[in-house]
Picture 1 (cartoon, rainbow, N blue to C red):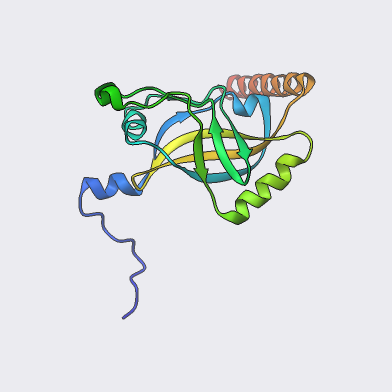
Picture 2 (cartoon, one colour; picture 1 turned 90 degrees about the vertical axis):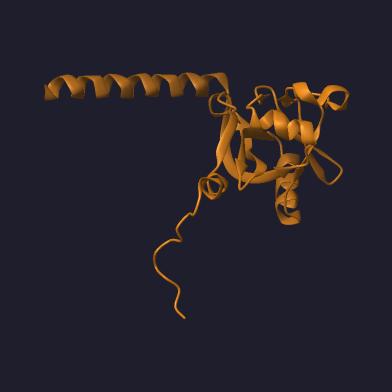
Length: 169
């Protein structure tokens, strides 16, 4: 029996929601402050109240980074707000959370981080097939003059688009 070239039909909305990813939060400053080289998708070891808080979209990655402790990778300083209905069983909003990656990926990241200048930056938290995922990037910090050059380029491109727009009309 041959497989059909057409994609399978999604039967109901719950299947559709599981197939696409829902972004909870992004680290918008990462692209400005760091030169992103490689991206990885990591799972997170979370508590139940953290997952419920993430589903409400109550997280912040602004000052967060990933750090190795032994051979394990942890997300540090990521803020996931306490879940109101958890009561006394709530979590610490700033606790270190273990990231779940393949052994090969962990070895590669550890090798790069031990080199001078590399760090691991979280880019976004999202749900994929009902599981909380974190997109991390291997990054090098940009110097101030690099950021200034980037701003100049962006301004020049904006001016060129503006000029092209007025020439057409």
